[in-house]
Picture 1 (cartoon, rainbow, N blue to C red):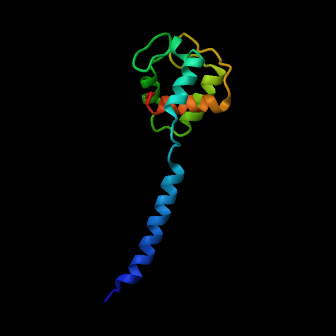
Picture 2: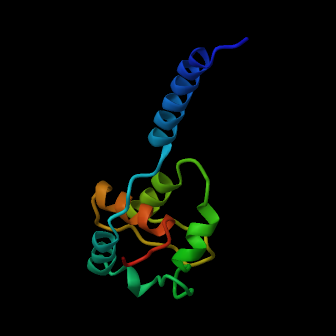
Picture 3: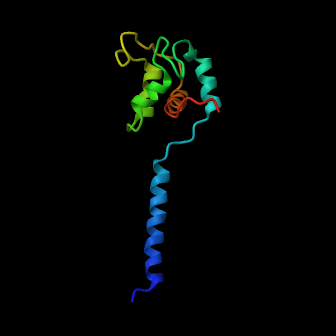
Length: 117
């Protein structure tokens, strides 16, 4: 006969470990209001919209392309800071005078769906 208390301790340990691992892998919360403010301040809306292509791609299309890819936020933050060319067609994205932290905030916001709330 198997005694239940002997099964609970290993199960509790496994659940504790699983919650630690998933918490460590979770994306940080995005401050949507701050990100929207940054996008306005750095005139991102001059070339991008959330739901349609302007000069550059729609942010929902960017989020879809990078969904689930490791390092996506870092890649987008680098493109925001340093510019890029050829990723979305012939029109290059110029570099932006923005801090690494603010570029990361924008990248995470774009990947999270560019919601304003």
